[in-house]
Amino acid sequence: MLSRRTLQALGAFFVIALALSACGGGLPGNSIATIGGTKITKAQFSHWLPIYAKQDAAQSPGAPTIVPDPPTFTKCIAAYRKALPKPAKGKPKVSDAQIKTQCQTSYNRVRDATVSFLIQSQWLEGETKDKKLTVTDKTVDQQFKTTKQQQYPQESQFQQFLKTSGLTIPDILYRLKLNALSTKLQAMITKGKTTATAAEISQYYNSHKSQFAQPEKRDLLVVLTKTAATANQAKAALQHGQSWKAVVKKYSIDQQSKLTNGLLSGVVKGQEDKALDTAAFAAPTGKLLGPIKGQFGYYVFQVKKITAGTTQSLANATLAIRQQLISQKQQNAVNAYVKTFSKKWKAQTTCRKGFTVKDLCKNAPTAKTSTTATTTTGQ
Image (cartoon, helix red, strand yellow):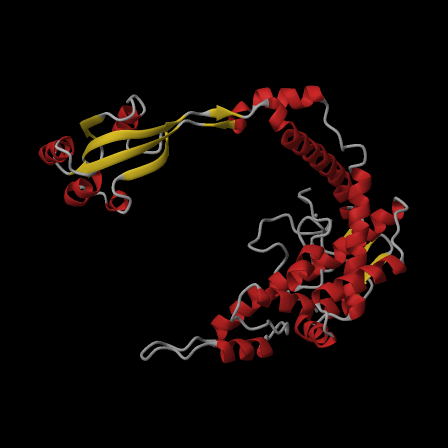
């Protein structure tokens, strides 16, 4: 859980299809948002912003880590400029204005991720407090020690991780706490949604039989030619005992089937040229047929093998169906819960101008924009 990939997963601890407007006036001067009586401070934002900038850079190998210094982006422009390759001879140099636009776009993305994390963290803490769900420091500490030992058995490895991620140990403990709270909340939401009756399983099986069926498959030997005359020559050669390998090599224009000496294995109805498909699935095994005129030329073919279609029995499919039905029930329960959850906490969330994230702030602009937040930089 301490790797970059895992931290990204932890960051999405309870973000489940949030899709549920006036500027954020009256906020305390040191806050970017308030949720009920809880402030999210500029200091918190400033702490997490460079962490998310590093995670954002990790998604684009070779790109510089964004230096979040709006509105001038002087440091960001310098970082980008340093990372840019020299322009090819005769090509114009990338202008500072172009780089600044990229810095602004990147900053908006990182800013939104940071604000979203801070708001959703408070939402989760508030919701679990209301539901009297708790996680002890001892539990979090133990999880930290276990995960650290698994992923960073050498202390030097762990120190390097802290350096490259920008995280502190308290940051990691906080993320682990959020993850544990999220797990408890979801367990509460899905409690009782752990069974599927025999009737439900049977109904699903009968309504989705195609999911449990394997279609008939045929192995074909095929020669494809441009003309009917050439196809007849190929057929005659086969009738006179020449091997498929030799005939395919001499006459076929299909480069792919040439690699397998004309063999097309495991063909399912509907996969091939319509004319060949129709003829091949009506033919018996072992009979040389053609020429058949198709979309790409003339086919001479033989069905080498037929593998009959099968359907998995209800008894054999029961375990997979049960697991799928339980998963659906749990997801439906979460989806229903999150509608109320989102409405409840969004109604209590007011954001300062420049930090208004769509779907999280009740005062977010209603007009559609190219990013998930306003483009005004934070002050």
